[in-house]
Image (tube, rainbow, N blue to C red; front, side, top):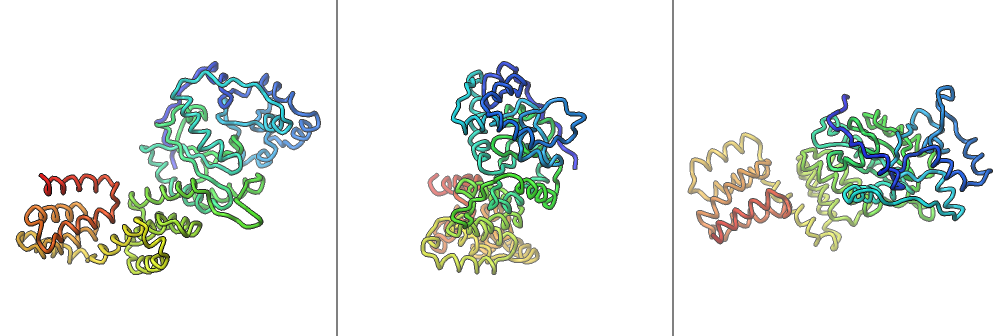
Length: 414
């Protein structure tokens, strides 16, 4: 798979980089400064634990390569080019254990760069202190990125219980961060642990390849898999929200199969998450599995707390609308009948029902809006009620719904 090369990294000045601890170049002088904070025995132990990939070609050791846990597998471990963003070196961690402080500068970035660093620290560095973070550099225009995304998201969801977290970084929106990682082509994928890159996962293009690389890393890194009193716990609230967003994105992009897989896993980890159950039902409807979706809904409605949740109500509306689904031949017949008899409100309503169930929501909305404009009181406002049910099933914050509601308001209130 070819990698996109449209993105070009910025080149921040060395003075600016040196002024912030997260962006400090790993110079030999800085290394020696930090080594002074470690006992001789600890330094010897760390040095002895390191196994270089190629001792003959190796002239000096970077702090990242010196990571005693990651360096044992040279095939996986790829040292990031300096400067390294967000890195807490093994030397600084050892110093922290001895309760000694290391004076580091914290100024020199402009406001936008500092905000970028803060976001990266919160979304990537902090989670990586206890978990393995997959950092995926991507862009909307990148075709290879879109092909790799389902693979990464699926594996990240499968490994969430083992302590793996996915962080996606849009290189167009976070150019400063991408520049610090010297990203020259995308997709680029790294694995970070305790603020440091421990593996380059970019070469993984299939679920099996990525899973194999993660398994090797998890064997060597003390990742917190969420164990409490010997019992495994699921992903955090933030991680669940991230997976829900992935599921919604997949569903909106038309990949109902991947969306259903993501929602099902979230529902398994968090049985009380109404959005996960609702997303699963909608995904099943999109797959044409309306009978199975009805069974899922029936099971959820047995829980009073879930049954009254707005997300479940929206899923129920979507399922009811899907009951009007017909094959292409029947839809074409209903369309022809509606066009031939524009005054036949029953024919128009039947076509609108079938059109929405078939995914032609614009046709359905246009027909229903015309019915409301013609006779809003017909059949006790059936056309308007149908529109409101469609809005609920689609999602009140959906852009299409917002636009269509404005059209309805204009008809009703002038």
